[in-house]
Length: 84
Image (spheres, one colour):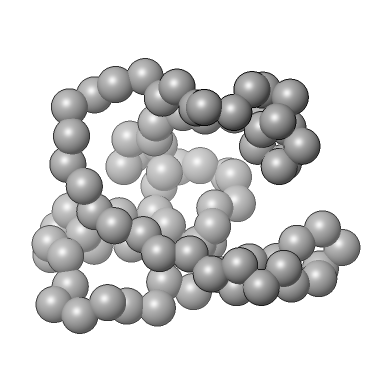
């Protein structure tokens, strides 16, 4: 579940999938005004090194660790709980 504004829970659950693709520029279908209303203020790609060095808070919080593990060990045999 994802924490929402003011520490409340919104009941949302996330699923993440590992997909390899050629580089591309993300082009959301929503306008920036609509994205801002959803608390999305930036879209960008992160390298593993940028993730490891970032001071940003990710969701899930241990995203840098999970990416590092995926790159080193490959995908797990069974789904995992990535946490919040």
